[in-house]
Length: 137
Image (cartoon, rainbow, N blue to C red; front, top):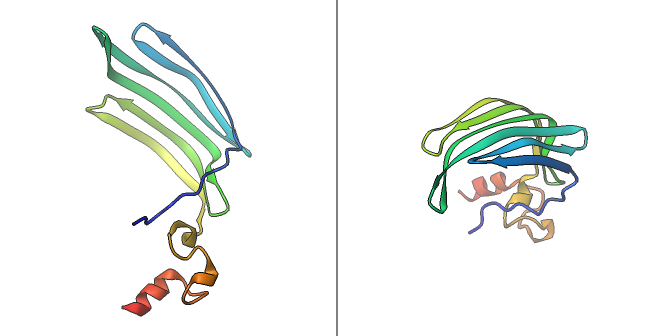
């Protein structure tokens, strides 16, 4: 049973990134994504250790910042972010810190259910799903 489904999103943003790899470190020197008037930027690095022919993730550190960036913008849902996050540590002890504000968010709930996407097929047109469910109890 599918409780939620997300329709495919159209990408209307511009994404740029630059990274480098030196010895056992990969550095994300610059990542930026713009969409409408918003921007999302990131920098960071990942350190690896070598063991014969395999690599093991040791430590990581990433900084993300967003200003009026729409993470998603669709007729059924939209989510705009402001703020900054820091992700650091290792896989055994990750640390996430920062502040994120959601200045704008909206969701059209009937679009996220497997039923009710076509009003002509609904038993009671115009009644919200929660009201229909409460009436059955």
